[in-house]
Length: 258
Image 1 (tube, one colour):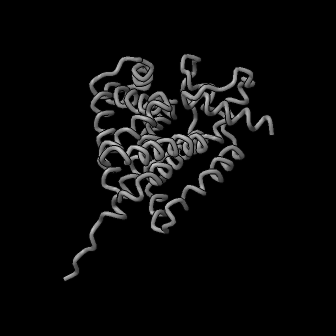
Image 2 (cartoon, rainbow, N blue to C red):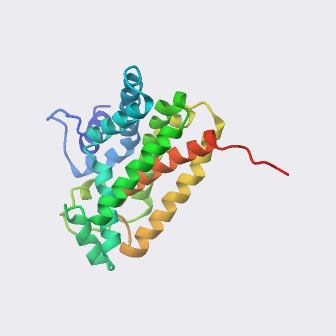
Image 3 (cartoon, one colour):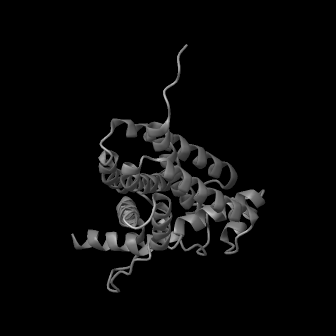
């Protein structure tokens, strides 16, 4: 039990800015296995964003409450995944070989592709969340944060890690994902699908899988696998896909049949 708690705290220490005890055991094995608890991080970050949104609605209009909740989730993760998305936009937008893409992806500077990409991403998420029925916004945040993170974990299992050096901060935690770790992550994700108590939410599953497969094939084509930034891109993209799917489910009007 103590070992599992160490893994959970390791996951929170790596994927969020939440302080963890200094006596947590650090090892290559723990870093690899803590990925199984990535969905738990999603419950926490999504729950925190939902709480901030709910509290903010007592003082501000929904538009501002949503903006504050998004800011809270970014602060909690240190823009970890958003930064990965921006790096991928820069790298694949400006690089035409595997070597060039990987070099650009490691560059801490944000270029035009990254800046435009992250702006469009955040605007799209804000607009999509704003279009979800008010009573479902908070719960939708939890669903999106949990399931998008599981998709990133799944990619760790299906694609090889491509960096051959130790320069990436993500390398120790994004390799050697075993079947057991993926299964645990999947089991932890399942309860989130019942949060909205609506069978229609199951429509997000095939769309998430299609989105994940598309990105995986794209990464595999250009660099032969994934990096930590690629995982951040998958998480951010799948989060947006969930919000868009929920908008389509609850906002779309019935077709007129002549």
